[in-house]
Length: 389
Length: 237
Ligand SMILES: Nc1ncnc2c1ncn2[C@@H]1O[C@H](COP(=O)(O)OP(=O)(O)O)[C@@H](O)[C@H]1O
Ligand SMILES: [Mg+2]
Image (cartoon, rainbow over all chains, first blue to last red; front, side, top):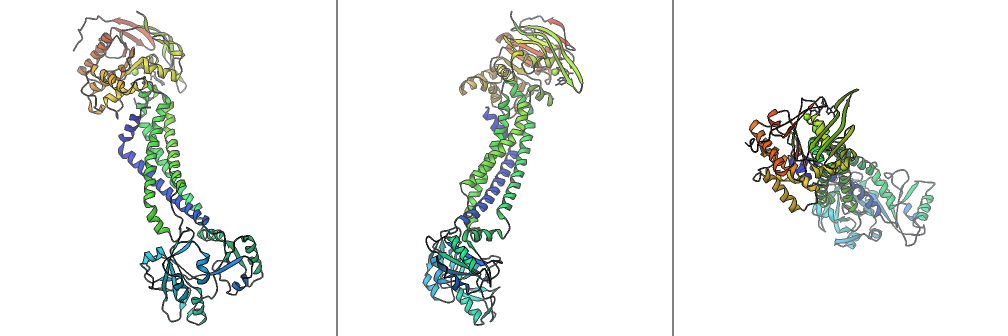
């Protein structure tokens, strides 16, 4: 195999080779990022706890459940703790375009039910002991520069105060999370504070519960609890749907449509485009080298060598592109994680992402090299030299 | 002397769109080893076709082509490739050097197919380039050379593996008179000093004058064969 010739052929068309390498790099980068998103979704679901169930209205996540359900569910055997989650949907005054989630929760069962949380600053007890306190994720605190003791104004959109002023929550603790299914960009405050404000006329809004989290005791069969809870409210007033945390997260993600399928489609389109770009380059290269290939055969080089020169060239271009795209992906992994933490805590490259990039480079390289390569193999010296005149 | 090249009742017909063209018609021809032949004839008379058969680049429809002690008609494609690598050197009208390689690398190319070390390849390529008078142009790319120099590199490439037979298809067709004479002189030296058998297609009578014998081909049939005098050194430029 005349390796030097292969290399010189690539270097002989510096601009075209560079552009091809760059477009492969961009494509591999894009496909790797898309894959990191879909596998991030999968990781988020995988990390969901098996011992937590979520109870929501059978109608929709947007319909509240009665507060009285908590008492009734507590009687179901195997449930160790119940924690309410109420979506607050508020807007932070200083926030420009950004968004983070706030929830009203039960402070006494919250921390115990989410062992993936740990307190990084302040004290959970201080949060639990103060009616208007809140606990926020580390990334959220970093993003806005919040410190323990600081008061954060949040304007309600679902729950508005009758005095027309924003709600004020005092940061008493900052948490970190060990699990990709529980992100560090959330704010939690006391459900009771919200409930009392609504009862006493300090605020207006729906007075119910969005979701009940049920933490199961060790050895409890989640299916039995699921069926028992669903059966309990079979005849109203509100029918419920009890799901595992993984199933709940999956439904939440697919509320936006089938994201993984969409991403796969985009990735497929990118792959298609890059395949034709490389194929075009290689067909051009094959045409230009018709005479060279004919001469090589006259000198005694085999048909396989003629084809190999073109396949090797395509592989070299694709390999360089894939390496570049992969490195680019690795370089943006951390900044991307910071951006996507709130909605996609599992985002990240892993072995399978890089393997995918390498596989694409290999496949595109081999096929786009073989198309002109097979022509090169069939070409005879006599044809080659007559064709060019 | 033994026949270096033997053509036995060779026929070659091209078919194109229903029409068939008999380019070589029951051709019978013997060439001796160590002789410089010129092959002349009008355009389209089958000269290139004959050269391609002798070089193992194409198959005859009928008859036998024997070069040295090898019957080319009995070899398949890859056997022919292997045979070409060791036994024959080609020189084309358009030089056909690979533009991305230097003169030395072009000459080394056929040596990649021989069982040689890197150092041996280099040494042999340099010797061939020195022989054609381009010892000082080895690292030049083809476009940095003149036409005559390019053709001399191509000749160095043809003799790099030390084949017995050199086939040249109008090697001076693209060169001016002076340059052409230098190239012809070089071919003549390869014949006289290294005893190569040379078959050179040309339609230039002056070029044919450098050969020992001139074979005339017309419409696929053998015409007369002229023998040139060989006054030693008379043709030196
Ligand atoms: N592959 C081919 N298909 C059809 N006709 C061909 C082919 N190759 C050569 N010919 C024809 O055969 C004839 C002889 O060609 P060639 O051997 O190149 O002649 P010369 O070299 O003497 O000019 C020409 O008429 C040419 O057009
Ligand atoms: Mg011709």
